[in-house]
Length: 506
Image (cartoon, rainbow, N blue to C red):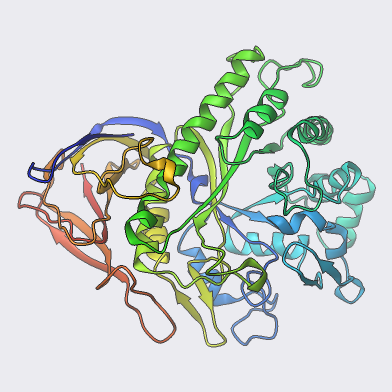
């Protein structure tokens, strides 16, 4: 949690962090990933059998090595919009018998060379958990139950035996399953009203939990601040001893999914745009509480959390999805991603999972070429957060000037605070504090008074470039991390258009 007091330009800025004031535990799943059958994310991204850079499974070794640096806890698959016409049985068994199908989400052809077993093997190689999204468009409940049986059952039944026939004896034990993707959207095959979706989702949830009570189901929300969100939460977060086998501690729904992408060609609106997500999380959390209160859900049932399973900087007019959505990210975008990640840390009390969309090539921090990989500007804040911003949230107080210009979306102005210094802090189990400060200002450095840093050896990571439009490509690196030390006593300067991480032992 970060509290903020607005100052005018003439006043001394101030940051106070209290390492003793530990708040909630941060769920590592906020550093989740997402791989969709879209553009070059799967084919030519994580899977490229013809490349000399791939292993015996066709997995790009350079991609695995890079993603391994992030310690990604969970990865969502196979979509995304792709899910609405995907039939999982097309992607299992001998490859020469797998059918090619028209792909309607991104207007292509899916050859199904990479499917369930390949994804599971890739996850095991990377050391991450799978998170599967069910087809709520052209799919059926029978198909969903079959997929769950194939992945998780150890019984002597048809789909469990089919998995064994395909070479996998041990169940995959997939924990997280999503009840569709963006079913509210007019771009969806099988778009539904909120009323129809809520009825269908609840019935599917009952059946899926009967087959495997250990799984955690994710409800399809919208933005967190819509009538869709309220309706599906009200209708699906219920307490019924009949539906839950008499349990007073179980729940059909574990998380509520919301999505948001941000972006602006103007630097400051771009960096402040993710603050819309902070308000979305707070509002969705309130709607969850409202549904529990109105439906009489007892305190013995764990509180449902938010699954922010698609987020990123993305401007579709700049990188159209039908053309592969290959963004070329700037320093400004990297600072926006830093703001995004600060938000997930600050609001971690309410967030059970967050998944950057996507991991490779498609609106991604990591790009592949025939020769290797390119780490885009947005890679560096993601790398810092994933490695170090874990453990417990710390209370922080920030006092500095506030941005008062135009915002995108417009409703940010007057709804949320927009300090030029965006801050979050954590402490891990060994007492190491990590604090991230994003200085969004285009031209002004800040030298705040710092309190709570009782150390004389502070590790400093600095992400910046010469200007907000700086980019990284295969030919040049304009944005990277610079490391240094600070004595913890002299004045510290947060330079313009920069992200800093300070780390010290308490």
